[in-house]
Length: 257
Length: 342
Image (cartoon, rainbow over all chains, first blue to last red; front, side, top):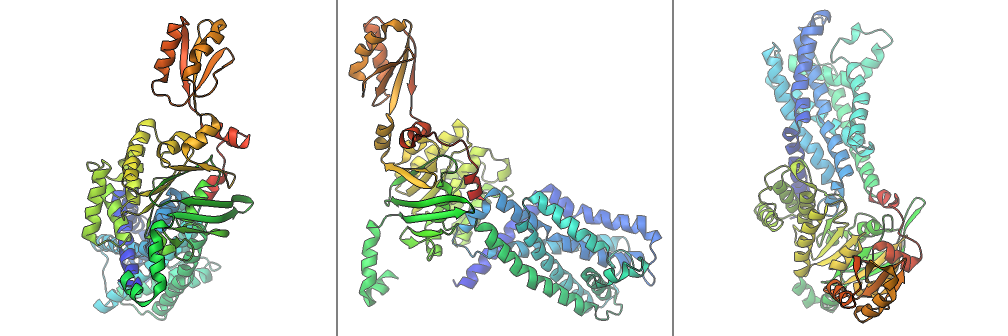
């Protein structure tokens, strides 16, 4: 086998490991199923009536936003897993094996894509049950799903960096949520940007989440996309281009001690 | 591959022929510093192929740092090391194919079953799937984990985790095995179980480098022991050479009538390996081996009509070794090794 084939094989072995973890850790399973479902239900039935979304039913407005948010957080397993491996000495075992070193990161992030697909299925099911409708064409919906999975993959690298930087799995948890949570809220994910105070609107408009959510909304609902899809795609690729090397660098630093 | 290379060029023949005589591990003046802590200050080690080598020292002595360099986890600042005939820096991947490592922490995934852990490690050694599974089953069997093989590791006891960890280190049947404090933190029962497992490996001819804080552990397995302190090898030799330096085992006998000490000394001189002496009213008798000596001592004192209040075997500890070799006691559990491990 060639080095590339070994690399792919090692990545798949470790992606499988990453995925096996989820059904076996009840708190993670809750995080990936019940939590997003609750979020959808709470937003639709508690805030839904109070939030004006001109041109959309609130369910239709909300679902793309909440899906992008959940998927972005799906990579959290990577942060948790890497921080855990460092803490428990597993990293040393892997590094003493004749495996492809980078597979520790690529395996994790690829595993997250599996998690993200599972999350999408859960969210779509709930959404459809409470009245969400795809109004986009089949091609648009497929493009939307592809974009969302790419966004999820990009955030896995952000979380890989967080996991390798945090001192413990608990700290990784705290970092992830305090940084990313506000970012997802100051965007067009849950409310129209126009309803925010005027000083906040420019922030929300330039927030990459806004572009991503708008792109998903356009593709799923078949409304005009403007430049949103392209800008969202650029942001996503940009995040990968920055955080993948950053994580690789951080990984080399953290294990070289 | 060897044959092809040999037919073309004379040089590889020499290197192929040299392999059997080459030591399994050889280091030259290894230095490593973490910030202000000088973890290794010029360590030279030589471990013969097929032998068991004990690296003995207190916490923070540099044992883990040495093992991490030898297992390619850490680059040395200065000096060089060869393992299984390959340079740990320039030929790290060759080294990794020939070593197994079980560290101070049981490095197994808690969210996988025992079987899945071993299968994963096998796959990462690039065994075919069927082969990896076969090997996993074999190892679970060898380590008496077959029944637990299908259970998640987080349900395992500490001893079971260490056994699984050791099994994981053996997946590729590595010719050189590194065990870094394999029994630290285990209870007596698990410690003995793990010792039994190590015993089997050693008798199968695996080269083993073992680090430990326990003199008895090194004594039990090692053909040679290096004592390491503050990043330097301060003594090296066979266990009996080292023990001879610190005085070996000793019987401590309390008499009912401490006034008869001199009589007791006279009665016991012939079973002592060195001159018995009186200290704090206790008769202290250096002995070469403990087997049978207690009974012997009791019989002799009985014959002389001297009543015994209490009798104990005093085995030299790491502290005794250190006191003898360095003049200072082994440092209390320090932080340095922990820094090194992370």
